[in-house]
Image 1: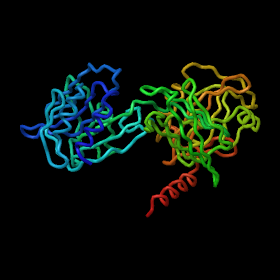
Image 2: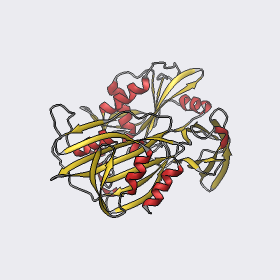
Image 3: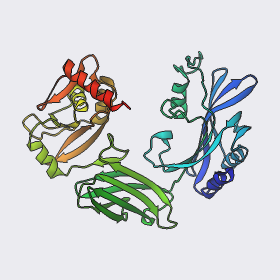
Image 4: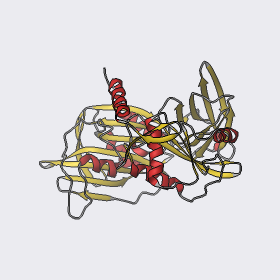
Length: 413
């Protein structure tokens, strides 16, 4: 990978790009400012960039700057593929040490890393990993952070604890043609909704590859009103969707799904048809199904969610009474209420999805809790729970010991 190839990629998308957002952190070493990590994102041409920020903690500065695309190209051309150079982004100049130039790894629009929100390629002028201050970052007139990584995570959108090799210059180059908003996977049909931007929906085709067991199916989907569907004939164990421009055959976005994954990718919904939900409800509460007329006490909801996470996962159906009668549930903002309850009462954090469905012309809310990867899970100030015979109960000492034994064996070489 050459610097010229990076700048050529920027130039090839000049018609889509507008102002460039630069967020960075610099640290003072003697009389020189050293770049720690800088995140660069060309915005869409329809977006205006007017915001600039600077948080000066003395020997540590966090900044946000808007520069032009021409200034970006000029700055990138001055960066070495290996070595060091003084580089300027807007008002900020720092020494950048580069140990390698890593080529454009592709991320789809659902990827949380760097929070771009569109299909993009990441080019990294990677700097050596460094030991930066672990003490609190404090200034009387500025926000307080427990340590450097907390500040970078909040201010730059980079999780250095999870992505420890993210030092240097991170250049994100989005494709603003179109992106996948939602994929709804049913028992026989898959529906996809897109958000076109620079490419009209009529000039986009979604190509599907689905498999279950030894059976595989290919399908092409055209779009009307930004939505399209494909009849697959089975509920897939794996699914790959790619959006392709009919004009130049360019890939605009992707999404993958495997039923074995502990959590669903962003925007992917597993849709039980109404008749299947109706049948599920008719069988009553089970090891993996719990009914609630309403959200009720936060502790009760948290107990059920933790019990599912500690066993094999399950569904909480809100709007169904204990006798399997669908009574409906219509509380506004219930998704946020449920999220706040599970975040504040469950430890560690659970994997779950909240969705609204209609059964027998009545609204219900479904909370799908995934079996946990980090067992045991606890209700704060209450303890661990498990699911047994359709009810929740406190886990015994023996059951907790068994969970830890299983966890230990899974991490043993």
